[in-house]
Every structure is written in structure tokens, then in C-alpha cells.
Image (cartoon, rainbow, N blue to C red):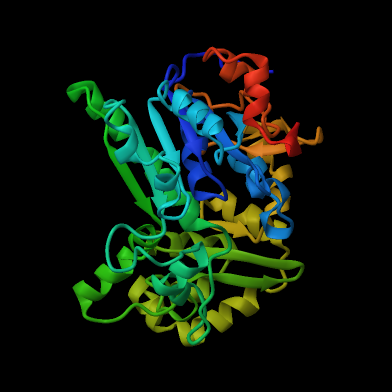
Length: 398
């Protein structure tokens, strides 16, 4: 059942047809869907295919489908048959945007690439999510971890000599977001020109954008950026501290904050120490200052330090596991989490887009769909009979 928002969303009336899987492409549709677009997810079936493979992933992939496929309708098509391809083409003819993230050549073989479609639908906006933008690398197979390693992010995240991927699918998610931004820009341009266009977003280029601040640091200073665990911090107190019952991140990033910190904890001796007068002085004193501070706060609990830093208006953060955020009081109070029903009927909470529009978070209107759940609704509206609709899907899903 579709749940309605209390206000009109900006992309209501826009139809998106997506041929996507994994994270990058589905993220693009997630953003557009959350903002009101009707997103129809075409899932390939037959010939050993059973829809988006992320429906069945285990371990670290088990959250992919429920997270990135809400606010979408699912249709199941056997794209290896003429009837399935014809149904896809008829559906695309009604679309404002087509989004895909399959390996190069896949959509062309099916006759569903931009060059094949634009003549009959010049207003079509076509978003391709790839590993690399066109160039010497575009034949390579890319994954989030691949581009993190070759794009400097793993180097910056890990300790020296120990590259480490970031703890989430940063390039997949951001690459999908940039695909959505490109689609939004193309919609605005279409208003002026009446013409659509092809948009491309890529994992590698996204990763390079993420590390661009470090590239520019080198360009400006002539000094290479050190991996984050080995960096020379711009601030003296900016680190994780071990305390009596766990860990907490504490930061004191200005001279004003230093004075407040010393006052809050009664560290008059540190406040009066001429060696610690300015932030840069304290950075130079880190070798002896940090062990001193670690000893001074070691007897506190995480809660005690959190309360004192919060009262003083100083930056702090308990070290939190992802699952703990389901009970986060701020997310609960502000509606940052929303209930959803998964395709197997179980219920949980999901995370909404991190924006408000007119004071409201864009909500879940459609739960993550079952495979082919909307075949009849979508294709009946295109003039197909129930018998024809059945023929689109393989016997494996009927």
C-alpha cells in the first residue's frame, strides 16, 4: 500500500525506469523516489536470473536491497525474449529518466542503450552508472574497493603501509547520488531546451573527488598528505580517548575552546602553561600533552565526559556501532528512522534521506517491493492483457 506525504514532493509526475542492481544504480533511484518520482525497477528473470541478486545476498550485502530499493515498484521481465524487450521498450517510452548500472555493452546488446532510444524519445534522460568515465580505464571492471585502492582513499584511511577500505560503500552511494544530481540538472535543462541527454557517473571519478582535498593540499603545500592515522593534526586535541568504560572522541579546536575545556575540568595548570598558549603551540606540544591528557581523563566514564563536554559546548562523540543507531534518541525524536515491511513480511526500521524539505523528511511511501509485485499494475496501464503479462516472466517466477 502506498503511503502519502502531507505535501507535494518535487518530482511527482516524473517516471524513472531503472535497470539497476547492487548499490550505485539503486541509490540514484532511491534519491529520486524519495523526492517523489515514480521509480519502476525492471528486474531480469529467466535463463537463470531471479531478479536483483542483492535480494539474496548474505553478510555485508544483506542490507543492500532493503536500504536502496524503497519507494520503487518492481516489474519482472525476461529481457532475453522479444516479448520482454518489447515490453521494456513500451515502458521506457513513458519514462522521463532511464537509469542503469550494468557492465558496458549489456544495455546495447538488449537495444536499451541511449543511442538506441533517443531517436524515438528525444526528451529521455539516460543515466549510466559506471566504474570509470570514458577513457583508458573504462574497459576495467570496478568495485567500490577497487577504486578506493587505486584512488587514494584506502591509502588515506589505513595506517602507513596498511591500506584500508572505508567502512561503507562510499563510492557506490555517492556515485548514485551524483547520478541523481545529473538527472536533476538534465530535467532543469530539458525545461529550457525540450531535449534530454545522457548523464554518466562513475566510481573512480567519484573517489577522486572524495580525496581531492588531499590532492589540493599537496598542490598548495608541496607536501604529500599522510594517511589519517599518521597525520599531523591541525588541532592539538582531536583524538579518541580510552576511558574507564570505553572510548570517546574529544576535540578542542580553538584557543577559546581550550580555555573552556581547562575551566570545565579544573585544569588551571594547563591553562597557565605558556607552552600551551595557542593552538599551534599545543600542536607542537602533542608529544607530551596528549599522554598527560589521556591520564587525566582516563578515570571518567563515557557518559560523564559526554555530559561535561555537552554542557561546555565542546565537540565530542561516543564511539557508536551502526546497530546502536536504531535506538539513538536524536534519530528517534526527529523521525530520522521510518518503519518498513521487507519483501518476506518482516518489519524493521530504515534510514531516511538526510534532508528536510519545509520541515519534513521525505518519507517511505512504498516498502521494498517483492519481485514482480507491480507487473500487473504497470503493464495493464500500457495496454497488456493478463495473459501477455504472464508471458513476460519466466516459468521460474510464476
